[in-house]
Image 1 (cartoon, one colour):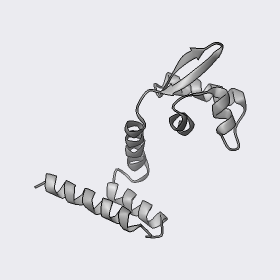
Image 2 (cartoon, helix red, strand yellow):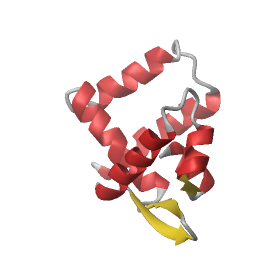
Image 3 (cartoon, helix red, strand yellow):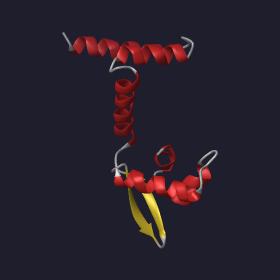
Length: 113
């Protein structure tokens, strides 16, 4: 999915070439077919090739995936997920990152008043 989002669209051969330690070409094609069956991808035909495109904008898909990660690995706790991310960075966030996080927290606090 990352490759298709980065390129906007891609054929199975392009996805296969872009994958580090790629599985077989057949496995890539099978995975793309599964992603299409699950509704994550759609395709258009270009001669004999299928060109795969995402069905959702990257931002919407990333939010959905992140919600699943928080639910699965952090028992639904957003604060635990954020803490794990900050810990993974060794607590080293840039001034810009800290300011953005603080601004988001202020905005959420203002909405809940």
